[in-house]
Length: 221
Length: 208
Image 1: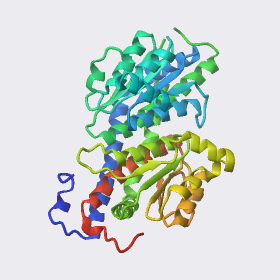
Image 2: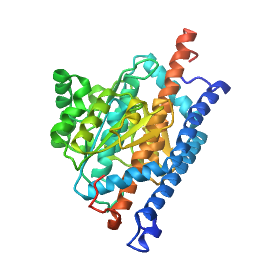
Image 3: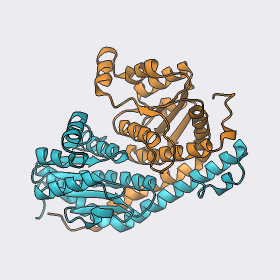
Image 4: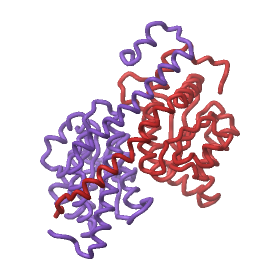
Protein backbone atom coordinates (compact mmCIF):
# COMPACT_ATOMS: atom_id res chain seq x y z
CA UNK A 1 0.00 0.00 0.00
CA UNK A 2 2.85 2.35 0.87
CA UNK A 3 4.24 2.18 -2.66
CA UNK A 4 0.84 3.14 -4.03
CA UNK A 5 0.38 6.09 -1.72
CA UNK A 6 3.94 7.35 -0.99
CA UNK A 7 2.69 10.85 -0.27
CA UNK A 8 0.67 9.61 2.69
CA UNK A 9 3.52 7.78 4.28
CA UNK A 10 5.99 10.66 4.18
CA UNK A 11 4.44 12.16 7.27
CA UNK A 12 2.13 10.32 9.65
CA UNK A 13 0.35 13.50 10.64
CA UNK A 14 -1.72 13.95 7.49
CA UNK A 15 -4.78 16.12 7.55
CA UNK A 16 -8.18 14.74 6.58
CA UNK A 17 -8.18 16.96 3.49
CA UNK A 18 -4.82 15.65 2.29
CA UNK A 19 -5.93 12.03 2.63
CA UNK A 20 -9.27 12.79 0.97
CA UNK A 21 -7.43 14.36 -1.96
CA UNK A 22 -5.24 11.25 -2.39
CA UNK A 23 -8.24 8.97 -2.14
CA UNK A 24 -10.11 11.00 -4.78
CA UNK A 25 -7.14 10.80 -7.11
CA UNK A 26 -6.87 7.05 -6.60
CA UNK A 27 -10.59 6.52 -7.28
CA UNK A 28 -10.39 8.45 -10.55
CA UNK A 29 -7.28 6.48 -11.57
CA UNK A 30 -8.97 3.13 -10.99
CA UNK A 31 -11.99 4.21 -13.03
CA UNK A 32 -9.71 5.03 -15.97
CA UNK A 33 -7.80 1.76 -15.49
CA UNK A 34 -10.86 -0.50 -15.73
CA UNK A 35 -12.25 1.35 -18.76
CA UNK A 36 -8.94 0.77 -20.56
CA UNK A 37 -8.80 -2.88 -19.47
CA UNK A 38 -12.32 -3.53 -20.83
CA UNK A 39 -11.29 -2.01 -24.16
CA UNK A 40 -8.30 -4.34 -24.27
CA UNK A 41 -10.53 -7.35 -23.51
CA UNK A 42 -12.95 -6.28 -26.27
CA UNK A 43 -10.13 -6.07 -28.80
CA UNK A 44 -8.59 -9.36 -27.76
CA UNK A 45 -11.74 -11.46 -27.41
CA UNK A 46 -14.58 -10.07 -29.57
CA UNK A 47 -14.46 -12.98 -32.01
CA UNK A 48 -14.10 -15.64 -29.34
CA UNK A 49 -16.96 -14.18 -27.29
CA UNK A 50 -19.21 -14.51 -30.34
CA UNK A 51 -18.08 -18.06 -31.04
CA UNK A 52 -18.49 -19.08 -27.39
CA UNK A 53 -21.97 -17.49 -27.11
CA UNK A 54 -23.05 -19.17 -30.34
CA UNK A 55 -21.99 -22.58 -28.94
CA UNK A 56 -23.69 -21.85 -25.62
CA UNK A 57 -26.91 -20.95 -27.45
CA UNK A 58 -26.70 -24.22 -29.39
CA UNK A 59 -26.13 -26.13 -26.14
CA UNK A 60 -29.17 -24.52 -24.47
CA UNK A 61 -31.26 -25.11 -27.60
CA UNK A 62 -30.31 -28.78 -27.36
CA UNK A 63 -31.51 -29.03 -23.75
CA UNK A 64 -28.19 -28.25 -22.07
CA UNK A 65 -27.91 -26.71 -18.62
CA UNK A 66 -25.26 -24.38 -17.25
CA UNK A 67 -23.11 -25.02 -14.15
CA UNK A 68 -21.02 -22.15 -12.74
CA UNK A 69 -18.29 -22.39 -10.09
CA UNK A 70 -15.48 -20.46 -8.42
CA UNK A 71 -14.05 -19.60 -4.99
CA UNK A 72 -14.41 -16.52 -2.77
CA UNK A 73 -15.35 -13.46 -4.82
CA UNK A 74 -15.55 -15.75 -7.86
CA UNK A 75 -18.19 -17.86 -6.07
CA UNK A 76 -20.36 -14.76 -6.00
CA UNK A 77 -19.69 -14.38 -9.73
CA UNK A 78 -20.79 -18.00 -10.22
CA UNK A 79 -24.03 -17.15 -8.41
CA UNK A 80 -24.47 -14.04 -10.54
CA UNK A 81 -23.97 -16.10 -13.71
CA UNK A 82 -26.54 -18.72 -12.71
CA UNK A 83 -29.13 -16.15 -11.58
CA UNK A 84 -28.59 -14.05 -14.72
CA UNK A 85 -29.32 -17.01 -17.00
CA UNK A 86 -32.09 -18.43 -14.82
CA UNK A 87 -33.93 -15.21 -13.90
CA UNK A 88 -32.84 -12.68 -16.56
CA UNK A 89 -33.93 -9.03 -16.52
CA UNK A 90 -34.98 -9.54 -20.16
CA UNK A 91 -34.88 -12.37 -22.68
CA UNK A 92 -35.38 -16.06 -22.18
CA UNK A 93 -34.84 -17.83 -18.82
CA UNK A 94 -32.36 -20.71 -19.19
CA UNK A 95 -31.54 -23.56 -16.80
CA UNK A 96 -28.48 -22.69 -14.71
CA UNK A 97 -26.98 -23.73 -11.38
CA UNK A 98 -24.22 -22.39 -9.17
CA UNK A 99 -22.10 -25.14 -7.61
CA UNK A 100 -21.27 -22.91 -4.64
CA UNK A 101 -24.83 -22.36 -3.45
CA UNK A 102 -25.46 -25.63 -1.61
CA UNK A 103 -23.55 -25.34 1.65
CA UNK A 104 -24.52 -28.87 2.73
CA UNK A 105 -22.98 -30.37 -0.41
CA UNK A 106 -19.90 -28.13 -0.36
CA UNK A 107 -19.12 -28.83 3.31
CA UNK A 108 -19.90 -32.55 3.00
CA UNK A 109 -17.48 -32.97 0.11
CA UNK A 110 -14.83 -30.82 1.81
CA UNK A 111 -15.12 -32.71 5.07
CA UNK A 112 -15.31 -36.22 3.63
CA UNK A 113 -13.03 -35.99 0.61
CA UNK A 114 -11.31 -32.63 0.25
CA UNK A 115 -11.90 -29.12 -1.00
CA UNK A 116 -10.31 -29.84 -4.36
CA UNK A 117 -13.26 -32.06 -5.38
CA UNK A 118 -16.18 -29.80 -4.39
CA UNK A 119 -16.98 -28.79 -7.96
CA UNK A 120 -15.74 -31.92 -9.81
CA UNK A 121 -17.96 -34.24 -7.78
CA UNK A 122 -21.01 -32.06 -8.46
CA UNK A 123 -20.19 -32.00 -12.20
CA UNK A 124 -19.94 -35.81 -12.02
CA UNK A 125 -23.34 -36.00 -10.32
CA UNK A 126 -25.26 -33.48 -12.46
CA UNK A 127 -23.34 -32.95 -15.67
CA UNK A 128 -24.05 -34.68 -18.94
CA UNK A 129 -22.82 -34.24 -22.49
CA UNK A 130 -24.27 -31.06 -24.01
CA UNK A 131 -24.25 -29.12 -20.72
CA UNK A 132 -22.07 -26.06 -20.12
CA UNK A 133 -19.45 -25.68 -17.35
CA UNK A 134 -18.25 -22.14 -16.55
CA UNK A 135 -15.39 -21.82 -14.07
CA UNK A 136 -13.91 -18.59 -12.72
CA UNK A 137 -10.53 -18.06 -11.07
CA UNK A 138 -8.61 -14.79 -10.91
CA UNK A 139 -5.24 -16.57 -10.77
CA UNK A 140 -6.21 -19.36 -13.15
CA UNK A 141 -4.76 -21.76 -10.58
CA UNK A 142 -7.65 -22.85 -8.33
CA UNK A 143 -7.23 -26.61 -7.90
CA UNK A 144 -10.94 -27.32 -7.49
CA UNK A 145 -11.81 -25.31 -10.62
CA UNK A 146 -9.17 -27.21 -12.65
CA UNK A 147 -10.50 -30.55 -11.34
CA UNK A 148 -14.03 -29.55 -12.37
CA UNK A 149 -12.85 -28.79 -15.90
CA UNK A 150 -11.15 -32.22 -16.05
CA UNK A 151 -14.41 -33.88 -15.05
CA UNK A 152 -16.49 -31.73 -17.41
CA UNK A 153 -14.12 -32.47 -20.30
CA UNK A 154 -14.36 -36.23 -19.64
CA UNK A 155 -18.15 -36.06 -19.69
CA UNK A 156 -18.46 -34.06 -22.90
CA UNK A 157 -19.61 -30.77 -21.40
CA UNK A 158 -18.82 -27.53 -23.17
CA UNK A 159 -16.24 -25.75 -20.99
CA UNK A 160 -15.71 -22.00 -20.52
CA UNK A 161 -12.97 -20.55 -18.30
CA UNK A 162 -12.40 -17.04 -16.98
CA UNK A 163 -8.94 -16.31 -15.60
CA UNK A 164 -6.57 -13.39 -14.99
CA UNK A 165 -2.84 -12.56 -15.03
CA UNK A 166 -1.46 -14.87 -17.76
CA UNK A 167 -4.08 -17.56 -17.27
CA UNK A 168 -2.06 -19.72 -14.84
CA UNK A 169 -2.70 -23.46 -15.01
CA UNK A 170 -6.01 -22.83 -16.76
CA UNK A 171 -3.99 -21.61 -19.76
CA UNK A 172 -2.12 -24.94 -19.81
CA UNK A 173 -5.21 -27.11 -19.41
CA UNK A 174 -6.48 -28.85 -22.54
CA UNK A 175 -9.93 -29.26 -20.99
CA UNK A 176 -11.14 -25.67 -21.50
CA UNK A 177 -12.84 -25.00 -24.86
CA UNK A 178 -13.04 -21.22 -24.45
CA UNK A 179 -10.62 -19.45 -22.12
CA UNK A 180 -10.85 -15.71 -21.48
CA UNK A 181 -7.75 -14.37 -19.73
CA UNK A 182 -7.99 -10.83 -18.35
CA UNK A 183 -4.54 -9.30 -18.91
CA UNK A 184 -4.05 -7.59 -15.54
CA UNK A 185 -2.19 -8.30 -12.31
CA UNK A 186 -4.80 -6.65 -10.08
CA UNK A 187 -7.27 -9.13 -8.61
CA UNK A 188 -9.83 -6.33 -8.37
CA UNK A 189 -9.55 -5.16 -11.97
CA UNK A 190 -9.54 -8.82 -13.15
CA UNK A 191 -12.82 -9.48 -11.33
CA UNK A 192 -14.36 -6.29 -12.72
CA UNK A 193 -13.45 -7.23 -16.31
CA UNK A 194 -14.57 -10.85 -15.75
CA UNK A 195 -17.97 -9.48 -14.73
CA UNK A 196 -18.14 -7.73 -18.11
CA UNK A 197 -17.09 -10.92 -19.94
CA UNK A 198 -19.90 -13.04 -18.46
CA UNK A 199 -22.46 -10.27 -18.89
CA UNK A 200 -21.50 -9.95 -22.57
CA UNK A 201 -21.55 -13.76 -22.98
CA UNK A 202 -25.07 -13.81 -21.54
CA UNK A 203 -26.23 -11.00 -23.81
CA UNK A 204 -24.71 -12.60 -26.94
CA UNK A 205 -26.18 -15.99 -26.00
CA UNK A 206 -29.65 -14.42 -25.73
CA UNK A 207 -29.09 -12.70 -29.08
CA UNK A 208 -28.01 -15.95 -30.73
CA UNK A 209 -31.07 -17.78 -29.35
CA UNK A 210 -33.41 -15.03 -30.58
CA UNK A 211 -31.93 -15.16 -34.06
CA UNK A 212 -32.26 -18.93 -34.17
CA UNK A 213 -35.90 -18.62 -33.05
CA UNK A 214 -36.61 -16.00 -35.73
CA UNK A 215 -34.95 -18.12 -38.41
CA UNK A 216 -37.02 -21.06 -37.20
CA UNK A 217 -34.14 -23.48 -37.76
CA UNK A 218 -31.10 -24.33 -35.69
CA UNK A 219 -28.91 -22.76 -38.38
CA UNK A 220 -26.23 -24.34 -40.53
CA UNK A 221 -24.23 -27.02 -38.82
CA UNK B 1 -21.77 -25.76 -34.58
CA UNK B 2 -20.73 -22.14 -34.46
CA UNK B 3 -21.95 -19.95 -37.27
CA UNK B 4 -19.56 -17.68 -39.19
CA UNK B 5 -19.05 -14.23 -37.67
CA UNK B 6 -20.82 -11.53 -39.66
CA UNK B 7 -20.23 -7.77 -39.68
CA UNK B 8 -23.51 -7.49 -37.78
CA UNK B 9 -22.26 -9.89 -35.08
CA UNK B 10 -19.07 -7.94 -34.69
CA UNK B 11 -21.04 -4.69 -34.35
CA UNK B 12 -23.15 -6.30 -31.59
CA UNK B 13 -20.06 -7.11 -29.52
CA UNK B 14 -18.59 -3.65 -30.06
CA UNK B 15 -21.89 -2.09 -28.93
CA UNK B 16 -21.90 -4.27 -25.77
CA UNK B 17 -18.48 -2.96 -24.73
CA UNK B 18 -19.14 0.62 -25.83
CA UNK B 19 -22.24 0.75 -23.60
CA UNK B 20 -19.93 0.26 -20.61
CA UNK B 21 -17.37 2.92 -21.35
CA UNK B 22 -19.29 6.05 -20.41
CA UNK B 23 -20.60 4.64 -17.11
CA UNK B 24 -17.09 3.47 -16.26
CA UNK B 25 -15.62 6.91 -16.95
CA UNK B 26 -18.33 8.70 -14.97
CA UNK B 27 -17.19 6.94 -11.79
CA UNK B 28 -14.12 9.19 -11.83
CA UNK B 29 -16.41 12.22 -11.61
CA UNK B 30 -17.89 10.78 -8.39
CA UNK B 31 -14.50 10.41 -6.71
CA UNK B 32 -15.38 13.01 -4.07
CA UNK B 33 -18.51 11.10 -2.99
CA UNK B 34 -16.59 7.83 -2.89
CA UNK B 35 -13.81 9.41 -0.81
CA UNK B 36 -16.30 10.84 1.72
CA UNK B 37 -18.05 7.48 2.07
CA UNK B 38 -14.68 5.74 2.62
CA UNK B 39 -13.73 8.20 5.31
CA UNK B 40 -16.98 7.73 7.21
CA UNK B 41 -16.65 3.94 6.90
CA UNK B 42 -13.08 4.04 8.21
CA UNK B 43 -14.18 6.13 11.22
CA UNK B 44 -16.88 3.55 11.98
CA UNK B 45 -14.56 0.56 11.68
CA UNK B 46 -12.02 2.37 13.85
CA UNK B 47 -14.57 2.69 16.64
CA UNK B 48 -15.54 -0.99 16.48
CA UNK B 49 -18.34 -0.85 13.92
CA UNK B 50 -19.13 -3.69 11.54
CA UNK B 51 -20.24 -3.58 7.91
CA UNK B 52 -23.62 -5.18 7.12
CA UNK B 53 -24.48 -5.59 3.43
CA UNK B 54 -27.68 -6.52 1.58
CA UNK B 55 -29.31 -6.59 -1.87
CA UNK B 56 -31.52 -8.75 -4.10
CA UNK B 57 -30.75 -11.06 -7.02
CA UNK B 58 -27.36 -10.28 -8.55
CA UNK B 59 -26.91 -7.64 -5.83
CA UNK B 60 -27.11 -10.38 -3.16
CA UNK B 61 -24.00 -11.87 -4.76
CA UNK B 62 -22.40 -8.42 -4.59
CA UNK B 63 -23.35 -8.19 -0.91
CA UNK B 64 -21.50 -11.46 -0.28
CA UNK B 65 -18.55 -10.36 -2.42
CA UNK B 66 -18.30 -7.08 -0.54
CA UNK B 67 -18.32 -8.88 2.82
CA UNK B 68 -15.58 -11.35 1.85
CA UNK B 69 -13.50 -8.47 0.48
CA UNK B 70 -13.31 -6.92 3.98
CA UNK B 71 -13.10 -10.16 6.00
CA UNK B 72 -10.47 -11.84 3.82
CA UNK B 73 -8.49 -9.17 1.94
CA UNK B 74 -6.83 -10.13 -1.34
CA UNK B 75 -3.79 -8.04 -0.46
CA UNK B 76 -1.67 -9.99 2.00
CA UNK B 77 -1.04 -8.16 5.25
CA UNK B 78 -4.21 -6.05 5.24
CA UNK B 79 -6.14 -6.57 8.46
CA UNK B 80 -9.49 -8.32 8.40
CA UNK B 81 -12.43 -6.05 9.11
CA UNK B 82 -15.81 -7.33 10.32
CA UNK B 83 -18.38 -7.53 7.53
CA UNK B 84 -21.27 -9.84 6.69
CA UNK B 85 -24.14 -10.02 4.27
CA UNK B 86 -27.80 -10.54 5.14
CA UNK B 87 -28.40 -12.74 2.09
CA UNK B 88 -26.56 -15.94 3.06
CA UNK B 89 -28.94 -17.54 5.49
CA UNK B 90 -31.74 -18.91 3.35
CA UNK B 91 -33.63 -20.24 6.38
CA UNK B 92 -33.74 -16.80 8.00
CA UNK B 93 -34.46 -15.02 4.72
CA UNK B 94 -37.37 -17.21 3.70
CA UNK B 95 -38.63 -17.39 7.29
CA UNK B 96 -38.94 -13.60 7.55
CA UNK B 97 -40.40 -13.39 4.03
CA UNK B 98 -43.07 -15.90 5.00
CA UNK B 99 -44.07 -14.29 8.29
CA UNK B 100 -43.59 -10.57 7.54
CA UNK B 101 -43.25 -10.28 3.78
CA UNK B 102 -40.25 -9.85 1.51
CA UNK B 103 -40.02 -6.10 2.18
CA UNK B 104 -38.95 -6.82 5.78
CA UNK B 105 -36.19 -9.41 5.18
CA UNK B 106 -33.29 -6.98 5.77
CA UNK B 107 -34.96 -4.55 8.22
CA UNK B 108 -35.84 -7.42 10.57
CA UNK B 109 -32.29 -8.81 10.59
CA UNK B 110 -30.80 -5.33 11.12
CA UNK B 111 -33.14 -4.71 14.06
CA UNK B 112 -31.79 -7.76 15.86
CA UNK B 113 -28.13 -7.94 14.85
CA UNK B 114 -27.31 -4.28 14.13
CA UNK B 115 -25.98 -1.75 16.62
CA UNK B 116 -25.65 2.01 16.28
CA UNK B 117 -21.92 1.98 15.56
CA UNK B 118 -22.31 -0.32 12.53
CA UNK B 119 -22.43 0.50 8.81
CA UNK B 120 -25.40 -0.57 6.66
CA UNK B 121 -24.73 -0.84 2.93
CA UNK B 122 -27.66 -1.58 0.62
CA UNK B 123 -27.30 -2.40 -3.08
CA UNK B 124 -30.04 -1.95 -5.69
CA UNK B 125 -29.67 -1.80 -9.49
CA UNK B 126 -32.22 1.00 -9.92
CA UNK B 127 -32.79 2.33 -6.40
CA UNK B 128 -36.30 0.87 -6.30
CA UNK B 129 -35.89 -2.20 -4.05
CA UNK B 130 -38.41 -1.75 -1.23
CA UNK B 131 -36.68 -4.17 1.15
CA UNK B 132 -33.31 -2.45 0.67
CA UNK B 133 -34.87 0.92 1.50
CA UNK B 134 -36.64 -0.58 4.53
CA UNK B 135 -33.28 -1.96 5.68
CA UNK B 136 -31.61 1.44 5.34
CA UNK B 137 -34.49 3.12 7.23
CA UNK B 138 -34.19 0.63 10.08
CA UNK B 139 -30.39 1.06 10.14
CA UNK B 140 -30.63 4.87 10.23
CA UNK B 141 -33.13 4.60 13.08
CA UNK B 142 -30.56 2.60 15.04
CA UNK B 143 -27.90 5.26 14.38
CA UNK B 144 -25.94 3.26 11.82
CA UNK B 145 -24.02 4.89 8.96
CA UNK B 146 -26.09 4.29 5.82
CA UNK B 147 -24.64 3.83 2.33
CA UNK B 148 -26.44 2.86 -0.88
CA UNK B 149 -24.96 1.61 -4.16
CA UNK B 150 -27.62 2.24 -6.79
CA UNK B 151 -27.97 2.77 -10.54
CA UNK B 152 -30.19 4.53 -13.06
CA UNK B 153 -31.35 7.84 -11.63
CA UNK B 154 -30.86 6.53 -8.08
CA UNK B 155 -34.60 6.04 -7.57
CA UNK B 156 -36.33 6.50 -4.22
CA UNK B 157 -33.33 5.06 -2.33
CA UNK B 158 -30.83 7.72 -3.45
CA UNK B 159 -33.41 10.46 -2.83
CA UNK B 160 -34.30 9.28 0.66
CA UNK B 161 -33.07 11.38 3.59
CA UNK B 162 -32.06 8.32 5.65
CA UNK B 163 -29.29 7.53 3.13
CA UNK B 164 -26.11 9.38 4.05
CA UNK B 165 -24.03 8.34 1.04
CA UNK B 166 -25.70 7.39 -2.23
CA UNK B 167 -23.19 6.23 -4.85
CA UNK B 168 -24.85 6.05 -8.26
CA UNK B 169 -23.62 4.01 -11.24
CA UNK B 170 -24.73 6.15 -14.15
CA UNK B 171 -26.43 3.66 -16.46
CA UNK B 172 -29.93 2.32 -16.99
CA UNK B 173 -28.53 -1.12 -17.88
CA UNK B 174 -28.58 -3.38 -14.79
CA UNK B 175 -25.52 -5.37 -15.91
CA UNK B 176 -23.47 -2.22 -16.53
CA UNK B 177 -24.60 -0.89 -13.13
CA UNK B 178 -23.33 -4.07 -11.49
CA UNK B 179 -19.94 -3.73 -13.17
CA UNK B 180 -19.55 -0.16 -11.88
CA UNK B 181 -20.67 -1.33 -8.42
CA UNK B 182 -17.93 -3.98 -8.39
CA UNK B 183 -15.32 -1.27 -9.04
CA UNK B 184 -16.97 0.96 -6.43
CA UNK B 185 -16.78 -1.63 -3.67
CA UNK B 186 -13.26 -2.69 -4.57
CA UNK B 187 -12.28 0.98 -4.27
CA UNK B 188 -14.24 1.34 -0.99
CA UNK B 189 -12.31 -1.58 0.47
CA UNK B 190 -8.90 -0.34 -0.65
CA UNK B 191 -9.42 3.25 0.38
CA UNK B 192 -10.93 2.45 3.77
CA UNK B 193 -7.54 0.87 4.47
CA UNK B 194 -5.74 4.02 3.31
CA UNK B 195 -7.67 6.02 5.91
CA UNK B 196 -7.20 3.25 8.41
CA UNK B 197 -3.45 3.59 8.17
CA UNK B 198 -3.68 7.29 9.00
CA UNK B 199 -5.04 7.11 12.55
CA UNK B 200 -4.87 10.89 12.82
CA UNK B 201 -7.81 11.25 10.45
CA UNK B 202 -10.03 8.82 12.35
CA UNK B 203 -10.94 11.18 15.17
CA UNK B 204 -13.18 9.24 17.53
CA UNK B 205 -15.06 12.26 18.86
CA UNK B 206 -17.52 12.43 16.01
CA UNK B 207 -19.35 9.39 14.68
CA UNK B 208 -20.99 10.42 11.47
